[in-house]
Length: 165
Ligand SMILES: Cc1cc2nc3c(=O)[nH]c(=O)nc-3n(C[C@H](O)[C@H](O)[C@H](O)COP(=O)(O)O)c2cc1C
Image 1 (spheres, protein in one colour):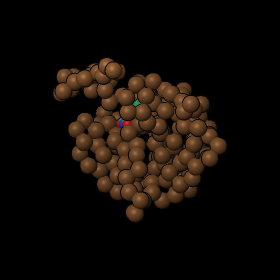
Image 2 (cartoon, rainbow, N blue to C red; image 1 turned 135 degrees about the horizontal axis):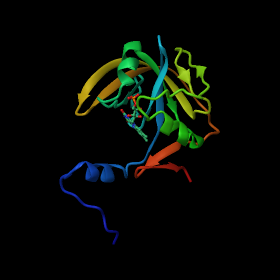
Image 3 (spheres, rainbow, N blue to C red; image 1 turned 180 degrees about the vertical axis):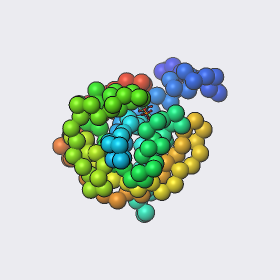
């Protein structure tokens, strides 16, 4: 029998992260164009929410310095990362740096930065934000979207980047 890592109640942050890290996901970079230039941050907590109306959600940390700037703009693009986007993901997770340094980008229909090679992109308008502990839950309406059927997504699993095999 396979031995499972068992904990009845999470005793701390490490245990919580270890167990929840078994839930594999894709990765996104959420971008917007502000008056001071392009902004963005790496975001794992993205998911689809509703088909009719078309809604998505993601959970920005309350410590994020980028999310408040995106919130003011109110519209943004969710760039779904491809297998060769590992270093881009790391670059867009470093607070207080110029995340777009050396990054060329196009513009999505709503004017947000579109990262080259993205598996898919989803243009959104922020609809509502809910409380979520040390994160918020941002619900957004989908305005436009597209996908590249020939590319593979970058995954995040047990604290590491992974690929679809
Ligand atoms: C793999 C990975 C997944 C992440 N997922 C999230 C997330 O779901 N929500 C979030 O707020 N931050 C997430 N982050 C952290 C943000 O990218 C990071 O805190 C942010 O870019 C900090 O910069 P800022 O101060 O410019 O917002 C993730 C980072 C990595 C490396």
